[in-house]
Length: 138
Image 1: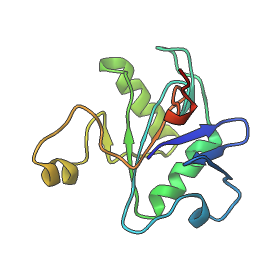
Image 2 (image 1 turned 60 degrees about the vertical axis):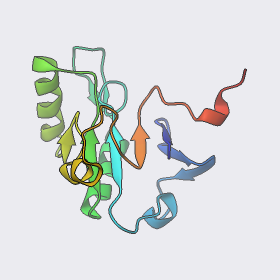
Image 3 (image 1 turned 180 degrees about the vertical axis):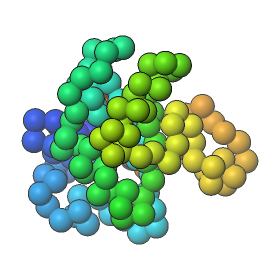
């Protein structure tokens, strides 16, 4: 599954249908058992120019906090490492955004599949560089 977020109005595109976050959450994302979102940092959570930190994407951060309150899981999925990663995690903590994993799969996913794939297992990816497969034309 893919999720694309348009930051000017925080619109979510899920399987080609666009939803505004002012809709009830149940209409935006179907939640039964917990779901997992992997979210990028630079250009997504934080309007930054790596390695500097920038302004928060407040609408997305609030959406993710609500998502997590519903019992769902969040993974910070970023190219940052070392001190740059530490700065990003601290920045997120300052914005009260807490992750269940950072640049790693959730322990229950590793246990379920018996390995820790380099690709993060999640239900939704939120990234400023995301594309839906059907948008690619040859």
